[in-house]
Amino acid sequence: MHDSQSLTLKALVDQAQQASTNLAQSSVQARNLVLKDLAIALLSHQDAILEANTLDLETTRDLAVTDLVLQWLKLTPDRLAVVRQFIEQLVGLPDPLQVRSGTVANSLYSLSGFRVMPLGVVCGLYEFLPEFPVLLASLCLKTGNSLMVRGSAETSNTHRLFSDLIATVLSKGKVDQRCFFSFESDRTVTPKDLVAQALPIDLVIPYGRPSFIRDIAQQKTAPMLTPVMGNSYLFWSSTGSSDLVRSIIVDSHLGAPDAVNAIEKVIITPNTNYSLLNVVFNHLREKKFTLKGDETLTAEFPDLALAEPQEWSTPYLSKTVAFKVVNSVAEGIQWMNAHSSGHANCMVTDSYRESQQFTLGTTSATAFINASPRFSRLVSGPYGTVALGMVGNGSFNQGAIGVETLLKRSHVIQGVGANMAGQL
Image 1 (cartoon, rainbow, N blue to C red):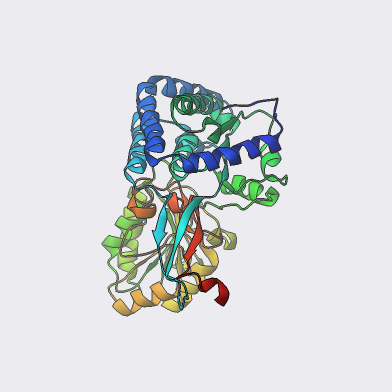
Image 2: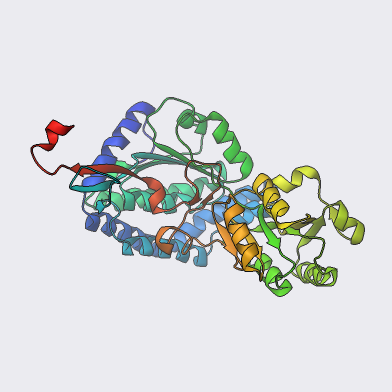
């Protein structure tokens, strides 16, 4: 469903709420069939999608935007294949909307469990990542949520085509097609209209540059996820392998296209072997990285640019890595907790004690020990299958944005008999 002038925003959201209720009551087979048809439609319309995306690229290039934005914006057959795999893996998941067994501690009840339910209405706002509406719509279909989505002017042609495909597939399925509503990127309905009013929207998910997400956060009244990318930290212990450090850094920047968990800061201790450090520097330069350092390291390595104080808390969103010296593992963990984005921090060490210290001390939503945090939409989410993005530790829901993110629980309690009512 697309823009309609005959309904107020409040009426549209109310309609979406009812559609979510209907969608949740539909069978998982019906929801999966819509997802399968969507994957087929994406493949059969691939040429048209790429043509629409080319129009967006040509318009955006005239605006003299950064290479990062163009990288996010440009669709390829490989990226569209990932979207189809994302949908196919969702189809393969069990129905998330079911009564699940559980226990109630010290309960007087004979049976207890919980029902998993959709949140209701999700509002997706994005810039530059054209496949976003398809990815989020797929997650919402699987979990029984309605989606209201709005893109940016830079993605207008691709957004319109994707929205038409989703609406067409829904119209042929056995689900309430009102569960999807797309807004154009003109000024008819702005992001502020959707998030600043007291609308019964259950969750806002913005996706884009930090400045875009920050603007939405400052205006929102509904619950909101705060996706983050970049500014992940790596603590390189003096016992850790320099080969592993450099391979993890390079691998973490291989996003497709957004390197959500890119390592942009590295912390070392004074007893780090500077010869090995220089080897790491040279390797990263060969891979076209820009390197920076704190005052200690720039004094030792004059070819390093000095990282300004604010940079330690700010994502570069580029192939840039800054190195910093701290006095101990504990100080390094404290610095990470204070300055990283809080979603994916790492440690390279051969010490079990240090790995446990890091695990217990980090507040990051995800901690990696001797492993790359490289983000993939096909392996990072719940059940190890799909994820839209990552949320840092400052949000009410942290970690991967996946199936479980769009669900809530309703407890189911069953008493032991008629006498139970008199005991309550």
